Image (tube, rainbow, N blue to C red; front, top):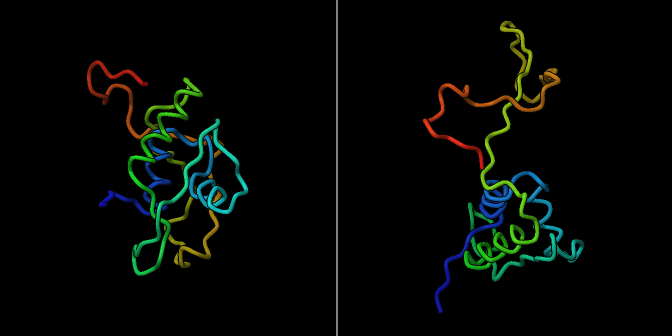
Length: 129
């Protein structure tokens, strides 16, 4: 039997896009595999097999299981975000700073999210879901 499967990082990305940042999905999936998290709003998602992804063996999830998990979580919590915009933050930097990125600790502005585009730039009839 052939199944369409997705690796754990891709599943975490899809869950964040479809359900929003209600959890750190990468860690939640890892905890579900280890049995540390019993469920998310009554639903649980477990991998179906192991597969190669970017040179390493990773847990793979059936796409049908992912879709059913999303439906179950949405049914349990009707207010769950349908789509999630990117969370862009503003960092203050100095143009003359030549340190490597991993040593540069920059202060981030107090506002946690900045819209990607202004309301006037959105498509006509755009309504957030």
